[in-house]
Image (cartoon, rainbow, N blue to C red; front, side):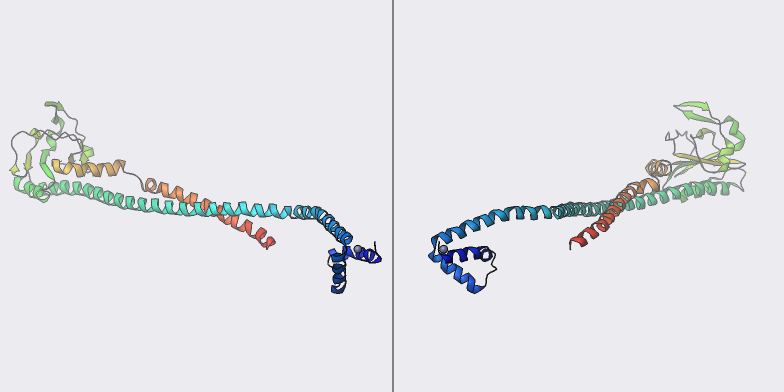
Length: 297
Ligand SMILES: [Zn+2]
């Protein structure tokens, strides 16, 4: 080995680390080009250097691991946020959909309630009108009764008047047989009452659309189709026309079996609570993820 070789080899570590000046580097390179042994030595040193680098990289990866965990945590959190956001949107859309559905139902229900109310009021006015025209009369007057009937012509089948004096003996026609019928006069005096029809044969006067009816009448067996009311002197009973019974039935259903307002809005209310719950979670997640993201920035 020449003296030059010793000098070059002393300089090689600095050369590999690029710490030499340009002049020195050029001097080393020129020597390497001409000296096979030193070239080989440099090659070996470089290989060793690479091997030494390995643990360094490993150490750096180890160092980064905590950050990778945080990054992974943020990834998970981000996908959870996405999930929450999507759930929130779906929940809002479903809630609004059911709310609209319930509102339409509620409007329909309100219409039905008003119609039922109107029918109830009409029952009262038919009976009150009749009792009013009877007030001044000793015997029920056909023309007066007919005028009331005409007023509700589209709805009534029969309008009948019974004298209170006969109340003990009232009977009804059931399956073609006459049965004693306990009339609760005080109940009828309170207002319009749905009753099982009093036998028309006992009426002081019955009118239909063509005036006074004298032939025997088989009452309608529909249990909410006949209404009666009484004052101190008379009992008035009317029967709805068959074509009007469907309306009566619907009003009856609405009044006694119709859904409550609470029932109509139950589902949207539950959905609203679910939406609010998801929104709350989303808000909390959003607030929690902010500081972690800030640290990484
Ligand atoms: Zn050499």
